[in-house]
Image (tube, rainbow, N blue to C red; front, top):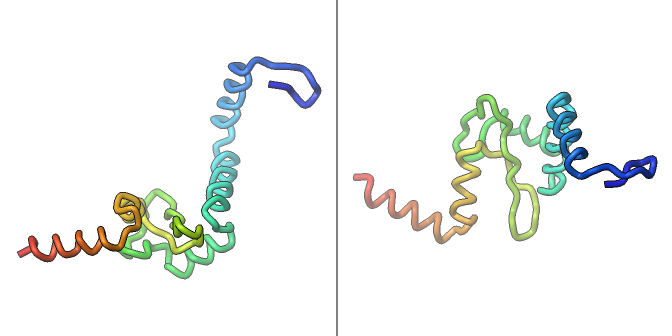
Length: 116
């Protein structure tokens, strides 16, 4: 690794300093990671906060509040457009079904058939 002043540093030492900084400044790291993740998923901080307010800080599917965690920013995997905010369980469920409507309908039919 090359420092700003042009001197070299060992990669192991650099990673150790990075880790120490992240541990000492968790609020800076969390904000930075969250913003990067949101942008990668097609969201801005403003659109995320607006969606959170519009959904009353509740999951768009199950309507439960996510306690102790931030809602997940869901997006369309084909076109990258933001869809809504989901709790971790609903977000995981959609991911496990690969956002496939045929699979989701098959699951609904299965539950309907076997819930009597």
